[in-house]
Structures are given as structure tokens and as C-alpha cells.
Length: 199
Image 1 (cartoon, rainbow, N blue to C red):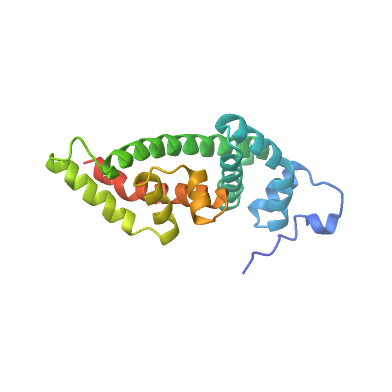
Image 2: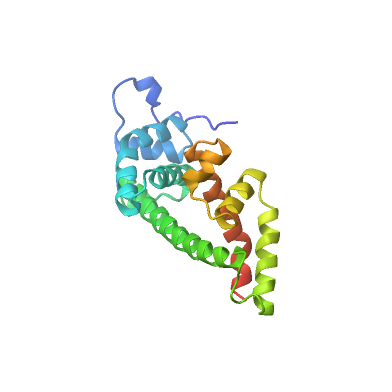
């Protein structure tokens, strides 16, 4: 059940076209008023998206970060402290953290792609090493646990060395769907395999 807006906070809907002040949006957010979240989104989403796009250079990643930021604003609203700075400054701070997380995840994905590519290759120069065999078994085991579409995209990528465009042509899926399956599949592999590499 959605929290009811605080009576002390004017509702965005009740005020019509008149924009709320930043302080009113902040008070409404802290009181759990979803209309104030919508107002915050309208006011700062372009800035958030612009910061993310400039830092990441990828529109889809920037959109993902923007969604994560406003989800973080809503979930973390109780942690906002007006005495420490403006609501806009707080949102920019969340944005910077989400961008840093996204860049770190990208670096981990690239490392994992490189590692998985060598581990899944049909010809492996280190094939006789026991650790390499164990790595291949672990990666194949985790790959088999992925949802079928993610598994198919990654198998076509690593076993058949197809590009995402070629995979889209072979499967008949839109390119965006292929990219999404690849990204989600690699994220799941990273989450499952990363602890194994820390030992």
C-alpha cells in the first residue's frame, strides 16, 4: 500500500501547474509522497541523465543509471538531511556514486568477458593445467544455470564467436534484446564467479 502524502506537504496534483520549491519536494519525499518523487524526477532527471551520459558515453547505460538514481532517491529518502545540502546536490551525489558503480561494473564485465572467452574457447593453450580444466567446468556449470535466452546469447558469443548483430540475425531477436541478454547474463556470471576468483 502506498504511503499517504503528509497533510503538511502540498500535493503536486493539488497545486496544479505551479511548481513546488525544492524544499517542498524534499519535505514531501521524506514524508513518502510519490507525487514529490515525480516532481523531483521532472526537475532533475535531465541533469542526472546528462551527467551519466557524459561519464559513460552510452545512452542505455545512462538510462539505467538514471533509473537507479531515482530508485535510490525513493529508497534512501529517509537518509536525506536538508542541513547538509540541497536536494539537488544530494541527487547529484547519488548520481556520481551510481556512475562510479557502473564504471566499476563495466571494468569487471570486460575482465570477465576476457576470462570467460579464454575459458570457453574450444582450443585452450592451458588445457592441460588442472586449474584451467576446473575453471572451464565452473564457467560451463554457471552458464548452464542462466535463463535460456541469456545462455543462448553467451554460447553463440563464446562458442561460435558471433557478434551481437550476427546473433540478432540468427535468433531473429532485436539487437537491443540480444544486448540486454548478454549484459544480464554476464552480470549473473560475474556475481557467481567473482567470489571464486577472490580465494
